[in-house]
Structures are given as C-alpha cells and as structure tokens.
Image (cartoon, rainbow, N blue to C red):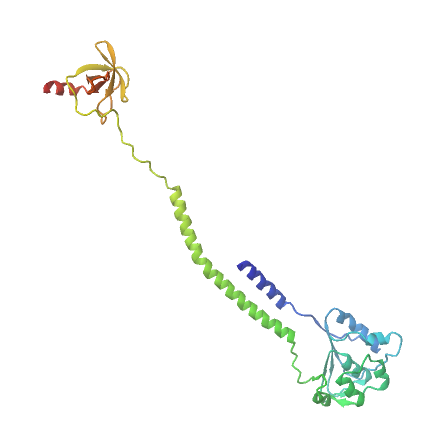
Length: 298
C-alpha cells in the first residue's frame, strides 16, 4: 500500500514538473508573403509550441494567390500576436490578430480596419473582434476597452495558467511526499527495533546449549541392610551391577550392593552374603572391609 502511494505521488510529481510545451519566437526569415509566413510558423505550431509574433511594422495581406486560402484556414490557436505602441498593423496584422489564439496590443497601437478583400479571405468573421475591425480602424486602447478578446501588451502579466497549476500541483505533491516519508519513518523505526530485539533473543535462545538433566550415578543395586555372615570371594567379571565371583573354586552370580561406590575390578576381593530373598541364587557383594565389620558384629 505504501509503495503504491509512493509510486503514484512520484508519477504525479514527474507530470507536474514537465512543461506543457515550449515557447518559440517567430523566425525573422519567414518571408514577406502572408501565407508563406503562416506556413513557416506552422512548423513550430505543429510541434505544440507557442509562437510569438511581434509586429514592428504593417503587414500586408496577399492571400489571393493559389494555396493561400488553405494557409489562412490553419489552426493558429498557439499563435500569439503582439503589437507595440505606434505600430499600424496593416491588413495582414489585423488578420493575424483575428486568427491568433492570443492578441496583445499596446493602447497606442493602431489596428487597421479589415477591408472587404481581407474579409473575403478569412474563414469566418463571427467573433466580436472581427466584427469590431470590420466597421473601422481602432486603437489598441479602444479594443481593450471593448473587451473583445484583446489584452493590453504593456500591462499584460505573462501568466500561464497551466504553468501556475503545475507549480501548485508540484508544491502539493512535494508536501504529500514529505508527509508520507515522515509517516513511514515513524512507523517503521519502533517496529524495526522490536523486531531486532525479538530476533536476537530468539537466536540466542536457539543457539544457547541446553545442559542435559543430571543423571544419578549408581554403580550397583540398593539392597538395604547388609545380611550376615559373609564370605570372601574373588571377582571374576565386572560387577555392573551384576557379574560373577569365585567362591571355593565355584562361580556364583553376584550383584554389587554398594551403589554409591565404584565396583571392584576383576581379581579383587569382595565379601559376599546370601540374598534376602530365600529363592534367589544371587549373592550380595560388599567391599572387603565389610567382612570385619560383619564378623565383629556377629
């Protein structure tokens, strides 16, 4: 979810900072013929550029030749015409003002009336500007006061509404992007620390060796009180806890009766007694010192 929102904001930011289109000034070597000039400017207009034409002297309108009417009828919405102070537009300049998408005139400029020949070559004359110029020549101030779609050149604020919108959108997206980054950073930092602590604890617990449970050491069988009397025998096999002892040259099974002491090795002497159980043929083996203790007690 966060990655998707981040990507959308970044995409919007890229769109916002890309300019809507280049602005180009009209070339000075476009010729003097009115249709030829329109064709020359059309190359830039087709590329989406805003072409600015500044009329410093009257412009003739010779569109009656072959192919000229098609040139006049081209889309000139990206054409911007500027008429400085003290300049007469001529028939071609007045036609440009009518055809252009934006006209900027100085109050002291002179916009000539459109004669019948020029009106015949124009595609239409339905707009307020064309109708006003159809009647008489007017100054730039008169056209501005009539509010017929002409802006004042001297007081014109070169404000591109699209550019302003783009800048505003860029600022909003930057703020949103900054807020998103701060939110992600605040939400991730504690989680990362807790996760690291939990992972470290789990890893330590998993890697720490667990000591085995203590096993009680027992070397024999707990048989209770020692029975007497006892006899001396020789260990022949290891008593773990049961083995064989030799008594009067006969082998008997015996069990080591001192579980807390290490049983003797084969060849050692032990004291043996009969078992508590009447039917058992297994003897109880004790350390040799027990003999004296047993005999002393008997």
